[in-house]
Length: 309
Image (cartoon, rainbow, N blue to C red):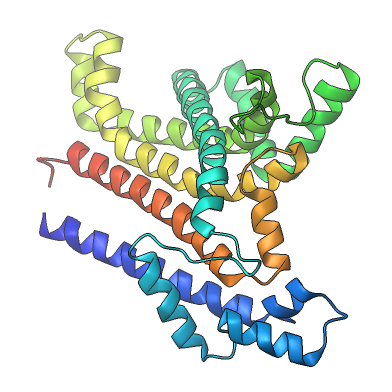
């Protein structure tokens, strides 16, 4: 319990350090929020007044502390254009979370099925196909995958929509509008995790206790579920947890391509406006989500390794 608490504290420390880095990086970008909001034609007096209003005339550590102290109470402040950051996140973050969650579910299912099949037939036709294909999809960025999917399934075949339209709730108007964005995110991660699942299962199957179970005549399914999977589970869980961060990062790009109503366009606009509060709030939300998933993976690994030395 003490070790787990220490892990939580370290992860929180890393998240706070990341937020501080966000403030520094945005501050180093050319221009500032006041100039971005008022435009190029604004006079020096108006810009100075806007900088004072936004607190840009204060030292960077003071601005970070003021924002962070409010964020710890759930108040992420306002944007440079006077909008509530909390309201923007409440409107956009659930859509991005939905997209990333469905893509994660697809990644888990595809990776487990492909990894199990691949490890069961390591030298067959499946292995000869999956070895190069998984390496290929890993190497291709999400925006390239998204572009190819639009080209094939929207323009050539006309099976699926290339853009996303929303209903009154702000979510995609039909489930089919999620297919291409989810596929663009899940395909590279499924390729990577399939290789991890395959490797973890092969390593676990080579353990002495598994060989003993096979020699004792236990059914193949029992050997897999009771002797192989528990030993492979920590590696698989860690790989899946790591993919969550990649999926969130890729979602911001994929959303722009498919006009998906998530945080992608909002983040792009906030960087353009040099809106530090909004950028930091997005990092805080996604970072907290990723941290929780990583802690869950750590708990699964600790459970799977219980009683081992």
